[in-house]
Amino acid sequence: MDGRTSFFYVIENGLGSSDRQQTLVQEFLVVVVTIGVIATPILYLNYISTSWKGAYKRYFCESRIDQGNCYAEPEHASQVLNIFCLLASLVAIVELGIFFLNVPSTLFRRVLRVFFYVSFPLVGAVSLMLVLLSLAWIFIGALQQPSKIGPYALAAVGMLVNIARYHGRLRRIQARVKFHVVEQLDEHVRNLARKYPAKVVSVLVENNIHDAMHANGLSAPRVVARNAVLVLILVIAPPSASPFPPST
Image 1 (cartoon, rainbow, N blue to C red):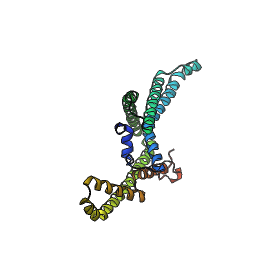
Image 2: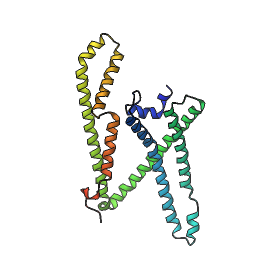
Image 3: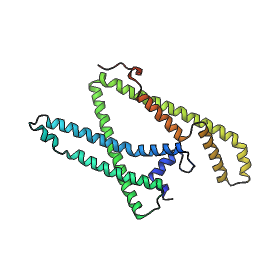
Image 4: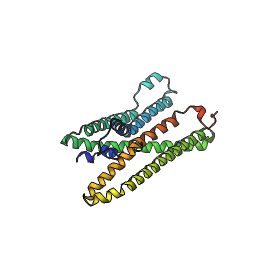
C-alpha cells in the first residue's frame, strides 16, 4: 500500500503496467520512461548551468588582461545550480531504487520521500520557468530575424503536429479494438454476471481488453514506444529530407 502512494507508481499506473504481470520489454519500457521523467528536468538544468557559465566567462573575461585568472575564478550561480541538481538526482535515484526493490516502509523511507517531494517539484518548476524564459527569448529573436528562425519554428510545429496526429490515430485504433472486444464479450458478460460478482466480471473484461490491446500492439507501453520512435525519426532525419531550404 505504501508503494501505491509513490510518484513512480503513478507513472507505472499511467503506462497501464502497475497491477499486471509484465514482460521483460514492458519492464524495460517502464524503467526507461521513469528514468526519463526524472532525468529530463535535471539534465536541462545542468545544460543551462553549463551554458550560463560559458556565456558569463566569455562576457566578463574577454575584456580583461588576466584572462587566465578570470577563467579560473569560480562562477557561483552555476555551482549552486549544479550542487542542487546533484542533490536532487541522488534523492530521486535512491527513492526510485527503493520503489523498484519494494523496500518496507521505515522512518528513513518516509523522510526520503519528503525530500523527494520537495526537491523534484522544485526542479520541475525551475526547469519550466527556464523553458518559458528561453521560449520568450526565441520569440523575441524570431521577431527580430524571422528569416533565420522561421524554418526551425515551422519544423518544430510540423513535428508536433505529426506526433499529435500519429498518437491520435493510435488512440482511435485502441478505442475501436476495445469497442469490438466489449461487443464480442457482451453475451458472456451477461451470463457471468448471474454467477459472479460484478467486480470479478469487470476484472475479467479488463483483462481481455488488455490482452487484445497487447496482441494488436496497442498497449500503453507500445504506444509510448511508437511515439518515441517517431520522434527519433523526425529528429535524426537527414537535412535533405527537410521541406525547408537551408538558411543563409
